[in-house]
Image 1 (cartoon, rainbow, N blue to C red):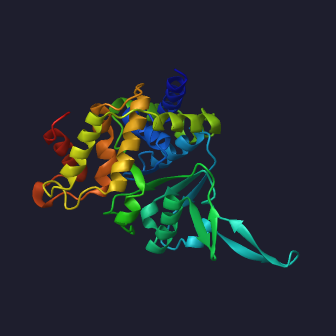
Image 2 (image 1 turned 60 degrees about the horizontal axis):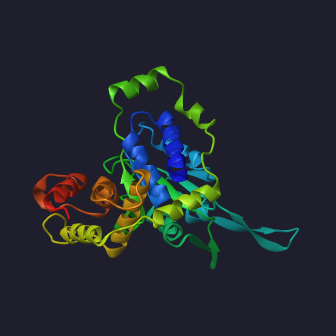
Image 3 (image 1 turned 90 degrees about the vertical axis):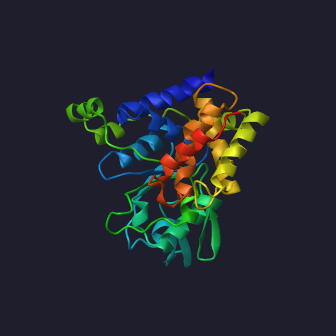
Length: 306
């Protein structure tokens, strides 16, 4: 099957740059094929920005990178109109958000005002500048990195912003073999300069269409609804998943199924992407002492399979 061949070439190329993180790389590919924005959260120096760059290059998408800081203004992202004497008119100069992929580095360092400008871009795929609405390129993705909240100078992302990310993944430290390859091998930044795109825009859109065509049975939808209901029961989380989160979960599960070479979603696909797709939208109940990801896994264990 043509789609499998394309997906394999994407994964192979990404795994040469980000070594020893096959499952996280697969999640990233699933996220983009499902048409969702991606949040990579981890301590500095484990390859978050490198991964974001590698994804944009491998998918053949035009990207711009913005380093988020506390004094970044909304207009630094969206662009400004500047009066040009020769034309005797204000001419709009588009900002970095007008790319197919916006790499938002350290997104949680920006002020809430700038984050809300980004929110419109992520949700509506458009920006309002000086009273005028401008459409963003198609496709449009935000791949954001953020440091853990306990680091100095970070603003926690508001729930509404977190909810716009289809997935949140964490890379973690490499294992010993992978780190040995990093220490002995060539610089990962240099490798980024020579990454050929593995997809044309046409092929990318075909793969996204293939994701939408993946079949979901009634039994599987019942299972997904059982999981969503469990998040709302008050036993595991303070508040449950919204309908929007449920729809996002289905898209991610379909992408996961396609990557696994199937034209239908299996319960395994749902379980494989559930923590990455929903944990950042949920707050665990009180004193379980578990993080949201562990709590989601415990909830999966407690929910009977169809």
